[in-house]
Amino acid sequence: MAPARRCSRAADARRRRRGSRARGIAIIEATDYVLYRADALTDLAEVLRPLNRAAEAAAAAASAWQLYEQKGNVVAARQVAGLIEELRVPSPV
Image 1 (spheres, rainbow, N blue to C red):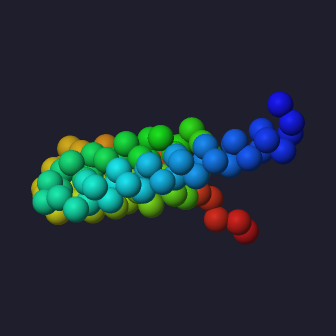
Image 2: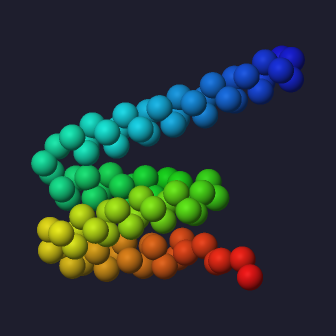
């Protein structure tokens, strides 16, 4: 396979992943199920973490934490707070 075609296929796969992630989150955000939304955002953070996308993962986890707090789910909020702490990106000095 030609290198250009491989690059094109890789870029297409990345676009499809981004699109499916955005659609999945959009679907769940349109519901009133706050805990499902928080769970989906936590899952997203866990998926992004090994891809070295710590800032995006931390943002998703922070959103999940807010939703868990809103619903009073102290246990889940505490778990996500730990994830946020693990993802914290050190600021350049």
